Length: 393
Image (tube, rainbow, N blue to C red; front, side, top):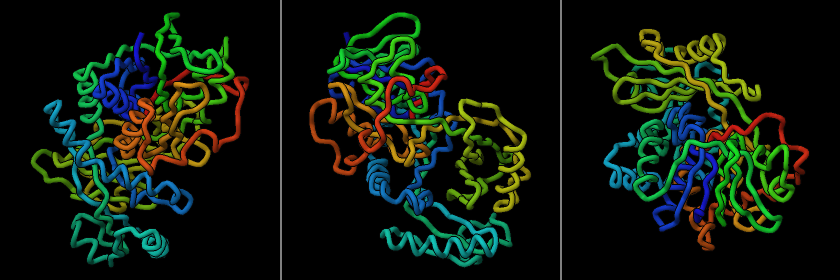
């Protein structure tokens, strides 16, 4: 019997397993393929400022609080594992491609200032002075010095090692459903017919969350406790500069239609689509075309980069695009899912909150207000027809 089961081994699940194990809990983190879901097919942006939108300003406070925790979070991981996760406080430019984009950025800058964000609207010449590889025709940019970057794949490896070193076990198993007696959780049933008992179950299953109430023997109490989370397909490209060439940019570069994430070694990630296509993970020629077109309009030099890889992930989105966080339903059930495009960014504060809830302590103040109760109640009959697909954060 474990003290806690974490269902889903993406960055949110691995962070939570690590932090729980650090507190002395016997933790089992279940996932068929730890870290190879949405967290692997990410770009590593920690960008609460450039990603703020008019409709999502309500959870900006949570995003900023987690961003503030990132330097200590990265340092702690490096200290316990010896691995550099590539955390860089590089800043970002949100770039206007044309006059229409410029008008949108002017409105966005005013909105960001109303939110108290540290941003500066730049003219074209000022933007190109900061990033000389920008296309000559760009019409300016918003300078966002607070945004940062982490190497998401190095992060996953470090979190896996840190969790194991702290005493957590990471079996490659699929959870079929969370078990309860109606009033408290009992553990989980596995797809292979086995089961694991624990008084605490933390759901970090990303887009696969809704399936965890079970199908053949649905648990009504669990079904009502789980948030509505759907998969949103995101396609990305991995490029690399010619050997010996310096990075094409120092900062994150974001247009209205695309983002470009340069790494110090010349690697570049370009993303990302946002497609409502269910569980489809196919890489498509149309996405490659559109991403390259939009990216090279901002940084023409990318045309000389080698195309290394296409990546596809399923981001977990709730109806309001904010995460679902906190105890829910039967005693011992904790939900930490639906992080949409901010799983990496929110890993520090989410894992801190999960550890607090598991211990019966108060979570960070910024984590309040994201409970499952804000959504319409669901029943077990509304569980999607697809199988569980645990892809955390």
